Image 1: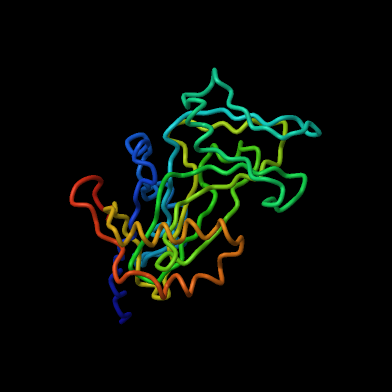
Image 2: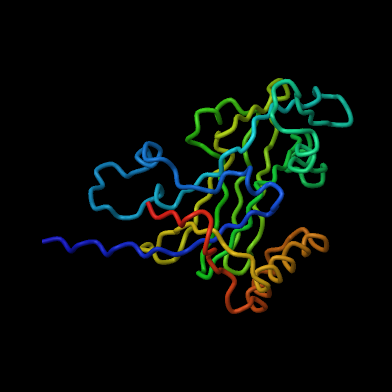
Length: 252
């Protein structure tokens, strides 16, 4: 007789709105819907063991916007908001979208546009957060490029999430509608029984101190990976304190 699978172990993963000004407009990170999770379930898996669908979350667009890039060969490269097809104001557009200079591009002929996702992520458990393109979203197939994937150790390196689009098709606009997935992220642990559980995090002095330390590092160095160990050494004993009010922890 086969042994029963051990029950999943939930681990709190905190999120916090980076900008209080935009906090009410942005949609909280959330699990994929059941239909999308079913697409990721292993064939014939009836054991109920945690899979990718249990570790994958989405960040959805809180606005509608159409962005257009200047044609190939036109300098300087500019990204323009098409006003008649956007609910996002020009001020908000300039605050959320940033053109990255050529030194930050992987290929000289492929411009990149960074989008602030407006969320800070943190946890008490050793794990890795992986940011991914929204590969299950139908609208993603019509994007003019793809999001660059990235990962970082979340316990020692709490940071704001940013999405970077490599703009590969100059003839195509980037069209986002409110509710469209902007990005996915997964959280992985050494113990396969552990599964992430999202919870809104309260602002505490310890959390703000560690975040300020990390956010300032990029002003001095591009390659921050060697600093992960030092950030862990200086980390306060506890960073994540769930908010007593606000969005509930997702446990479905």
